[in-house]
Length: 626
Image (cartoon, rainbow, N blue to C red; front, side, top):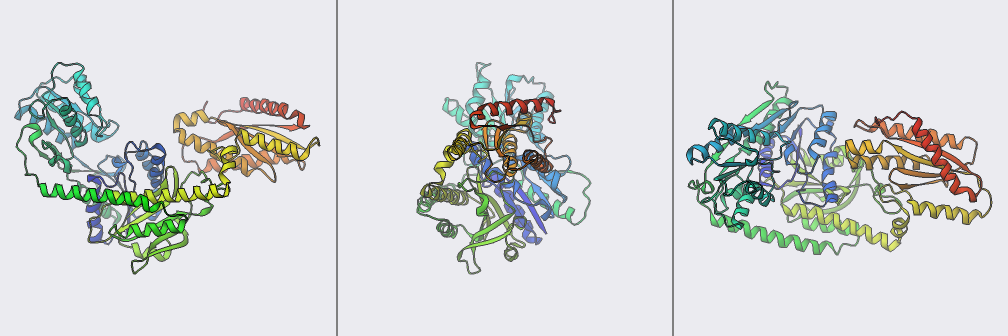
């Protein structure tokens, strides 16, 4: 049985509890558990985020018997929705949502409303507070709505009025402390008696900001959180929080999925698990456990050692001068990571154009991948080059090695350029979790590969001409390149007449695509048009992107009907593109073609082609609804 788990921000506390719990269940039931994960957190470079996001496009969902989605762990904007859209369109197997209610799937969630209701009541009835403010999570998420509802219900039942100025709309992250306190204090002279936060991260930030302002917690302001992270018991004061039984949730999620795969009908698509409240010194209650100083020191020493190891890793990778040396370096580094095996799988070399640029494509992973590095059966690193079908994740001869194993699949990329992916299979005697070292290994491998490509490009001078003449988005000529090629034609043919035509091409509905599906979809559409135009050319014909959604093409009138053939081929290729688009928009263009009589009339021909193109655009019924 093969199950896929989609998980983001992989080495955070909640995620490691989930992976360990599901791994235990998988081992007991002979399940192959593939964890498709990324490392990204808020604040990362936007191009790096694009590379991290690529992991949701890798697996062929038809290859799995079941899917678990921990959607709220994806901190990259839009990633959760994009993943769920793909699952709804492509997955035919049972799907379970973890900690996030998805109405059309079985969802395993905790009782957020009840927990926050009880926490607020603790401040009202145990501590006799009436001035209690609240910090929400991301309100597009159901759990944030439930937690706010629990707070409101408790306050209403106690006849305590709640004004808008008592609720700060947060984001679940740790940098909001100053904004939260500024917001509450702009309408009051004194601090509230308590601030109830929708998670621990925001509670930590509130405590830190109050301390910075000289306000004592809990003597002057009490604070509570939710999630009961490990930090909640190691801060001073210890944080009052809600323990969510993540291990139980994870086990229930994979268990119900297992039973669904076996054919069992699940009557209720909402499965609840009960939370446990821990009252500690941040709300003036006695701490429920004594801090273990030795374990804190051990963790601190481990982290310092790991940080030093990562710095050395950067230095070592800088010495790799070709791809094989990079793979050998990855092998040496991987030996220290408690791995049973690992696999570096890369796109085919043909994924780059003749100028060394990575070709823009809708799916960052090609259908044919190459296994470039792994361990042999004796645990020795092996540099290889074995092609295989992407949907299998590994070559056929390697699939036996991950049968009934739990393994992590993470993207291998430098910023937005995706080289492939890495599969980590951990030893059975270590916790089922990744940490910063695994991330550093991926980052340094990708950085090394990028530097190696840069070396090769600089040594061969391939990139100089490309930077000057090529459009970086589409990899066809830019305006400068178009003028360069026209000049070259003029230089070759002088004043001789040459039977060419200029085609002015403009996209239809780009603004509609950008406004409704995002600029990434708009860029994809521009690239698709550029490729269709390029593929419609023959011989020495060429095209250029003149800016925005405007293109121009030089066609050679070598035979009667060439201009009509170009139009037909372009139209057919665009139809092929639109058949593959899953979203509700159409990629289309308007075209105006004007023959060139002599070189002296080229500028006039460009203007005439523009006039014809806009005439066609006005006559068309816009397919995007403009």
